[in-house]
Image: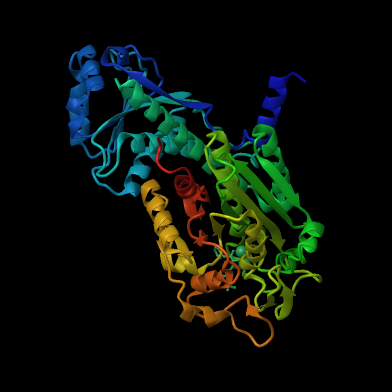
Length: 517
Ligand code: BES
Ligand code: MN
Ligand code: ZN
């Protein structure tokens, strides 16, 4: 097969379902150029400072003063956006005016840009271009705005369609451009990097969303394994290893294996190594919970909303996505991603409440509730990753219903044995609008895993379920600096927008990549 045909075929199999736009480019235009610029939808984000913008002044001249009049009228109206059709004097077919947020809150900014690709899809546009002609939020620079613009366009153009035959509405939007105004070559280079980063993070979020949105019968541990192996063809630099049940048994992962015992689907663990930094640099290790479906096992969950447990692999999916972003960007970092995948089912073979298993660490665990399974796969993966001599380890897991009670859907729960690492991650959440909130891991909580029948029990008492789960994990992470992100409330949405969110990919990418430079 011809090389390009072969690559395209791989992309189709592995990729097409979540790679939404072909590209987001950055264009550095002068006022003279913008009036001749062709686009099927020119999006102009404005606030009252629009009069100072060179691009807008030129467009105003070319439209004989009607452009600024339209913007003034729009800014005085209640509408958050307005579509101007066939504007005389511009080459752009339609212009979409969007009000820039007048507050600093990152959440409001994300919301503003989120609407743009959705609008383009509903207007059935194939391409769009964005001009930012408003003031910057306090403490943020133009590159921040460019990055979230690109990220929000890519990640919100996503429509899940892969299990629909007839009723799927495919996204019409295929490409986007972000327009900047007469930047110096040096600033333009940075601007392009920011857009590229945003696009890659958006793509990574879509990859994570896609794995999560797939029904559990289309996304078993073995299917995920195949998708992970497929990454090698797209990104030959990645080193990929997969572990079957025999491999997990020879590693003595009795805890991990206890979770999949009730299922006909064999468990899998995958490691993805990305080495873009110096070989002397210790890697950051990411460990994701990948329960492809969580029935609760013998401690069976109630039926209502149990379908949502297909998203119980979103921790692993966020690792998958983040590794894609790093490879796509050729990032100069060393990162190892680990995906711990199993299906939690009741059956005659299933683990029973009261069963005791031996973890890879040698600690025995009394499984008092088979529905507290995430920590059972994670603890062995966390023991395994010691061999990478990590700079630090971050695990990501849809671990507890309790974190939804505590924080709802806006913040992930963060716990750590290293306050510096926790502060850094909280900061990255703030910068990206993918926020986390810290809960304590004090010693007085740690007695909660005591039992008469093993070294540890997998559940504690009634209160502080999220902290209890993290305390359990902390018994396996003494050898390194570690943070735990509980994404049970943030990884997917219910209701009209039911679907994966791709969180906390933005937080993780920000942490690993740092500022655009
Ligand atoms: N995957 C669930 C956590 C979950 C529940 C996420 C609801 C999102 C919504 C996890 O495996 C689980 O079942 N946790 C139990 C722990 C309990 C048995 C100690 C929970 O939260 O109820
Ligand atoms: Mn469970
Ligand atoms: Zn679970």
